[in-house]
Amino acid sequence: MDKRKRPPADHLEAAFGVALDPELLERALTHRSYAYENGGLPTNERLEFLGDSVLGVVITTALFHNHPDLPEGQLAKLRASVVNMRALADVARGLGPNGLGPYLLLGKGEETTGGRDKASILADTLEALLGAIYLQYGLDSAAGVIHRLFDPLMAESAGRGAGLDWKTSLQELTASLGLGVPEYRIDEAGPDHAKTFTAWVVVAGDRYGGAEGRSKKEAEQRAAEAAYRTLSAKFGEAAGGSVQAAGASAPKVGGDSAGAS
Image (cartoon, rainbow, N blue to C red; front, side, top):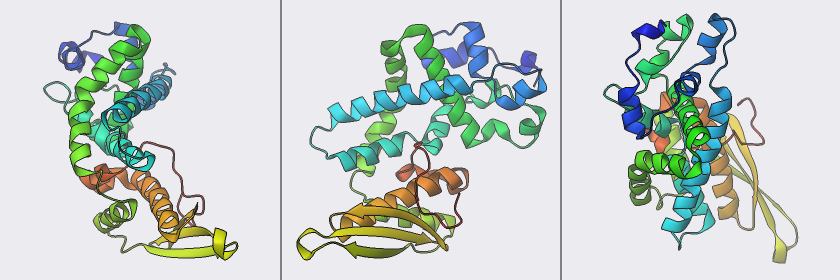
């Protein structure tokens, strides 16, 4: 893309509430496809790595303080509903008058295949911009920007997502993807007074989980979480808004996936 065709950064910076150093802003908006086509320019991937961590700690801290009575599992679920590719992409689309897409520096291939509205690219670029804000202004300012952008989503998720369990969320996701109903398998080990249960969940012939618990219910919940995280990462763009119910930006898990990568 010709950088001269990009809209001015004023609207984008107004959405964040801060003005970024032009060079840092440029790097945060540079997708690897553009860098490759222009002599190996620095990409936004290191900033994305940094921004992902900053976003995670700010959201986690907010949820910890805002929900003092929620157990760890419910806090993790709330965080997953806020920090996932689909949710980040939706936030990115709301930046400025026309979203983040027009500001991206993309290679010709990504440009022609709809990269400006691709959820993964929008989410990654938003994280890169948050990383850039952290580098220039520090954690307090970055946290202020994150709260400005994500507090409405956290409030919505608290009202919608905390009551759902992972098995329910997984079934809703697989239904939206046309993958059928998840099936659970349980192995038991140990004496009657100290049994350990290991659960797997099978979705469309692929197996996820290998998750242990002190009860069948706990093991199945953990297996469902593993499957949900993997499927939401793999099919996030195709799944649409349903992934937002409990999706995550965490690395793919699902230690035993027969055919799922």
